[in-house]
Structure formats: C-alpha cells, structure tokens
Length: 419
Image 1 (cartoon, rainbow, N blue to C red):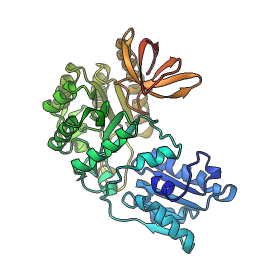
Image 2 (image 1 turned 45 degrees about the horizontal axis):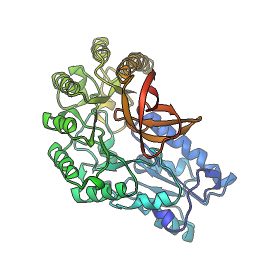
Image 3 (image 1 turned 90 degrees about the vertical axis):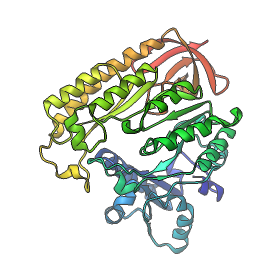
Image 4 (image 1 turned 135 degrees about the vertical axis):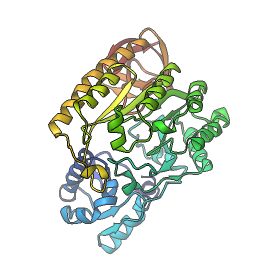
C-alpha cells in the first residue's frame, strides 16, 4: 500500500473505483482458500464493470498454486508470492508498460523491513482493520516445527528471524505515528524463547515515550513458553496480561499423531501456571483429526469445560496436500467433525461469558476502535484486535484511551459507560 501511495495512488474502499486491486490470499485451510478464490473472482468482475486495469493476487494461495490459478482465473494479471509482494508497484508498472501477465513467485524467506510505511498510509486517509491505534509487528517468518497437519513450512519456508534492531526501529516509528498497541506475531512466536525474552527486555529499555502502552504476544506454542516468560508478562506493566498459546488438543494420542511437541501434562501445567498469574489465555483447538476417538474428544471437551480459556479458536481438520496427515488412516467424517466443533463452541461461549462477568463493576482503560451505530467501540487489555470481543459504551471518547466502567456482559462483549 505504501509503495503505491508513494507513487501517486490514492486508496479507495470502493473496488469499483479502483484502477489496481490487490487480493492478499490465505492458502492454509480449505475455508480460507475458498474465501480467497471467491474474493478474487468478485474482484475480477471490476475489470468489466469498474475501472480496474490490473488485478494482482499475492499471499499464500498465490505462492502455492499460481500455475493452476493462472489457468482457472485468467483475469488475474499478476501473481506475487509471500516473498515478492513488496515488489507490487514495480511489477504493476512493468505489467502496464508491457501488457504482459507476470508470475513472480520466489523461494519463501522474506521479512519486510520498511520501518515507516505507517506515516505514508495514515496520510492516505486509510484506516487499517485494527484501526488507528494498533499495529502488528512480525518478528519471524516460517516455521521449524513440522506438525503433521500443517502446510506453513511448505508455503512460508523454514524459520528466519528478524534482527532486534529492525524490530525496535519499526516499533519506534509506529509509536511516533500514534500507535499505542503493538501485537508481536509470527507463525511461531516462541520458536526461540531466549530471543523473544531478549527482545522483550530490549523493548522494556526503550524510553517510555518511544515505547507502546501495550505489547501483546500472539501465537506462542506451548513448548516455547516457560516460567520466565510468564513472569515477564505478569510483571511488565507495558505487556498486556494476555497470551495466545495454541494447544490444538489435550489427548496425548492426538497430540502425538499431530506431531506436536510436549504432551497433555505439559499443557495442563502451563495453563495452570498462566491462570495462576492472572494472565488472560487465548488458545486454538483442532477437532476431527484422523484417529480422534470419542474418548479423545470427551477428554478435550472436559478440559474446555473446566474454563481455562478466556478465548478459544475452534477449527475442523482440513486435509492439506504435502502433509503427513493427508495419508493417515481413520479419517473422521466432516459432519462429525463439525458437530464436535459446534459442541465445543457452545461450551466455550458459556465459559467466556462467565469469565467476562469478573469485569463487571470494574474500571478499565479502553483503547478506542471506532464508532458503530452511534456507540463507541474499544478494547480492554484482555481483548486482542479483531478476534476477541469488544467494549461498547455511549458517548465521545477523547484520546486513544478512555476509562470505562463495565456494567454488563453481552456474550463475548462488554457494555459500560465512561467513568
């Protein structure tokens, strides 16, 4: 976006008015692939019924299936992969000049290093999905784990890490441009726990005016979470008391077939210590994995019912080519897997609603998101951007943070008033 804006383009939310449409795709599970293709096809219509001169596809689906998609969706003019998307403007310009379709897919292994994209995008008037006060900062790319269901290594490559200096530079520029919350992300944020802890200590040494108010940790695999990391999260006031730690399952048999490091005992111990430290816990579980018995599912269901997780992502196993799980026996029917997911969904809704009750009658700083139907929406420390609930309250908020007294729970969301 920044590269196009720097070269004279303006952002529009109306694709019918856009001269260039870039679709950033996911190729991880079937539902994401279908959404990516559906979105691309709808955008292709604007080549006939709009002003689109170039339709560009990038991201994981493009990285993995560009040759097939070139035949199936001929309206796509440019294919870029996970390493070549920063060349979007230059490649677009080349396409316009030569009127020749371009397929630029290279070996994965790139981490962006532009520390000042944010000011360019802000000047354009564009508000990213996480709104004006929050930003993601990627600290690593790819994965060295080989979970048997996962295609990430074949799409994103092996783990590569980013220097602390480049991460600190990006954080400094983001904060200078008004960002209050930094969400640290990677395919596996705790792949190198020593490095992560060292990075957090570096952030802690930044001058207070250069440091974000909140730092949030997303996608920390259990085998990389240790007591020192839990203590850092608990004790540093600028790190939100929140961790996203995907467990995928609790049955030892399923975990072993998934190729997950660690077992049920590791997970139970970690979860217990995290909750004892009053840290909000988000996780992810995967149901319908080959060989998941009724007993395995009951063990998982019981564990979820115990109320450990404030937030929980629920997924049905999706067969991916090139993964060991594809050829595993004892497949679970799609209908049964969906039923299991829905059953866990009902249980987790009750758990999250009950856990949210502890916020009622308390006052919290709320980071403002936006206005919706006359009310203001924001988030407290326990709510990550986009994927968790929000706080809604009446009235205008002055500044990025406002103190709100929580008065009631509405499922995943909280209702309050300015204090």
